[in-house]
Length: 322
Image (tube, rainbow, N blue to C red; front, top):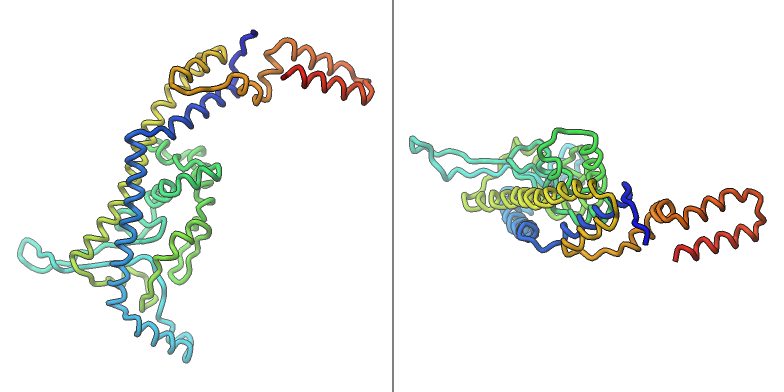
């Protein structure tokens, strides 16, 4: 049998098939990532329940209903109730070195892109959480949710920007802000929807620190830590895949024949069908099989064939591929 020479397309096919196996292997790093994501769901549920209790304690449901009644009656002058998903929570149960009471407060954003360090301003950490949380959904949309982890050591560049933008678009991200309406769409809107609560006062959340107990505050901190842990576990897992892929690229680049790539896959415990790789390759079989290449060239020379002759020639060519 004629040996099939490697080309860029075959290398890419082999690389992607083997990489896909790496990503789905049951490794400790992958399991830690999946467990971290499950824990995020648990912590979100706990923290959102506590947040609802804390917010409604400060802004009673009956007061909110009364103010809405006034708005309907008197219009904009009584428009003081708004929905929000981010809050400043504060407690004063700690004391400083002199024994005086001190306030501990932080900003907690329940939105998909909420900051992970307590700042009210968005940053890349919120996006890193979002792509890790919705990794499978983004993969299904032909996006690369691992781009932040893969480019962790690199500054912004066109390749990174391209894939980040594609992920953000697929998630329904918007860099606008509105406390009354969720400006996100799709997955972002669906994710954020359960976490909106009624607050009294339409000014920014920094001007209305909401009192809570130290134990309640701890629940909010544990939830935010769980989000950061998901980002960390995602990074660790993708790092292991990236290291394997770096070595894989080096090997595939050095191979001259497809059979060498098939042998590598076999040694890795991955079964690949050489014929299937060639058959689905747009140029491999035609270029590297002399018989098929000759038939193709001969067919190109017959410029004045009848329609019936062309159909017959094409049929014979297709049969020769099988």
